[in-house]
Image 1 (cartoon, rainbow, N blue to C red):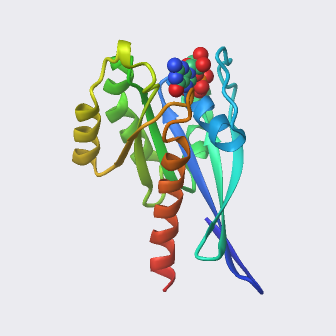
Image 2 (image 1 turned 180 degrees about the vertical axis):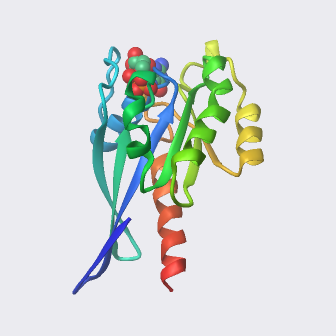
Length: 183
Ligand code: GDP
């Protein structure tokens, strides 16, 4: 997090990471949020990409630098750099693939191991447009989120359901945490 003062008050820059198994839709969630784009046949992200989004909260300019994705084993070398300085995380599974939900505790452990500060976390059940092949119920998602102290939302990067909401809730939570500390 960085902040700077000018005539208009303080501005904020927060880092947010997106984690979860391969192909759960991390890149598409980010491209839907940042550029309103969706790719049906997107290629795996190589290395790390990030996008910056700006929100106005309480008259202040709040920038979120959103990182995607160094989770794959072959990018292990950058793992700690990926997590370093993150104030928020979207931890994503695919509601049509139970194995991706079963991996969530492992992702939460990794986040805990590598993060150097308190992190606002949202559990995201993506691909909620795939109701006919649903493999994880809404209740299961909710209950895991409650037990781990996470926000929870089901999203669809395909039809845009809750994508903006999921990112905005995390950004607002970080802002609230930080501004409470500042006051
Ligand atoms: P990543 O590896 O986690 O970054 O996943 P991608 O964003 O590359 O998406 C993997 C695949 O899932 C791609 O074929 C996407 O088109 C598809 N996908 C991503 N989000 C959704 C979604 O919300 N609904 C559906 N039906 N497919 C999605």
